[in-house]
Image (cartoon, rainbow, N blue to C red; front, side):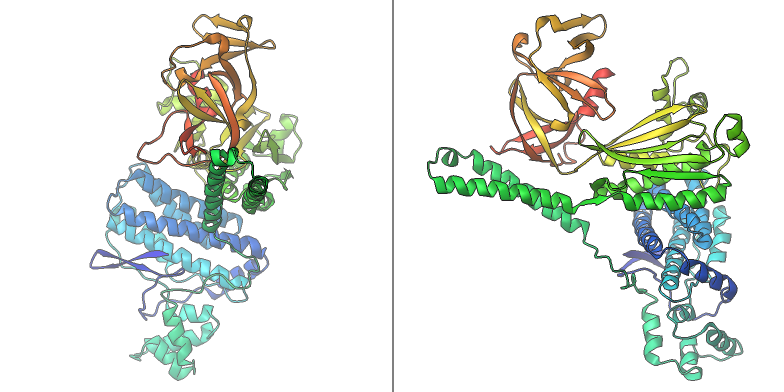
Length: 635
């Protein structure tokens, strides 16, 4: 992990394997509230240990990401992307800590989030002093996470002495210049490691306060017979605390290693297809060679399926976290809410499960805080039962994984959303918007119709996170809502992220790949199935349903050469939201498994293209983004 310390206002980067970088200063400071720490320890030891372990690991990842952005932010204090990224890290830590009753972590993260919110809204301009302060917040949060970890492994929670001072300084951001960090003491670490008691540390600090010039470690060795080795180890741990407890029986495999395995198998698949297409193999009359090639194909198929299954995990664990979230948040908001989960055994790619956790958390929080009515009386007036329901449902549909979040609350108020969008000049006053178009405004950064900002929601950051994470997975979000009756959010995600089955098509001299999951049917239409609609272009009549008819060459602005409409092949494609389009191509060449390759930042984003694949003849074919093509065509 990369951490930052300061010396003469110049950043010095140091690397450590784990959490808390602290100063070796021995200046005595007031002790923690013993009763408070004891109560927190007892509370933590009564909670689900696995959930707390996950929270600690995830929070440390968020803090590591925030520290990296802080280092980059020093070269440009106005970089809004970095500020928003750091803000989201503190926002997520705050929210999860609140559900776990970790009040110290929640309060400190909320205070840091509020300072960053002022920077996001241009109320203040960040400077080096703010960065120093926020890095101290990261250090303090990591120290408290270490206390949480100690408590659940038989030790004692220790908040540290810096929190109150940090809270005070965070409340007056305009006066911040470049404060000196005041990290946890040596005594805190020794107590946390159960080497000495708090009483021993207090007595030694009292000796020091009465004029003894020795440092705390020396007094502990001399007066309390603390082994020198233990004191030395505690001083060393001021730069790196112990990592996660070895008591965690789960085996963690690096996702990077899994990705490397899948990439290697993907390259092997490409080589395999080249071998199969080689004329020497195709024309060979050697039965042994033919048998070996066939056996290789079977083995490669098994290796591909096995490598993909290694990354597939049930979504049950994520749903279980939402159950805890609903229980705690419903109590905090004073609402009676029941969570119903369906399809918990549905499997999804591991990276997709990790990226979908934050969107689910924000959407469930919004459902409880904004969607569910404030009191049973309000629900009774609408003819609803006193206990509200939130339903989480996962299922497979057309090769995609769908996750639904439905509640029977107020639903989305399209009029209020549109009014807010007009106020922020995100909507045009002279344009008539459909409800599904209005709902898209809630995914914009900073957009919120909440009248009060709480420690649960209201800053307009949650749905922005939802959109960002779902787009990273090449997924889509559908919203259905009826005001006064409830809302349903449906996340549609691809089952796999690296290998797809695709249909290779040709338009003029160019070849493209259409994902087979997006294909409904192919046909050679007759002339009486074609029609022209004034102002709408051509349409195709498919069993009474009129679909927009577009040539792929026109959509991608490719020279189509001489067209022969009577020989054009039509492929009916569908996006994740169910919209369909009839695409005209010149030829269907083949159908095969392809490995998705990124086009690269040098070329940039190409409308209608999601990636590329290396084919058996060594050529590169572009993979079509059907959702984008349909949206481009309909617009």
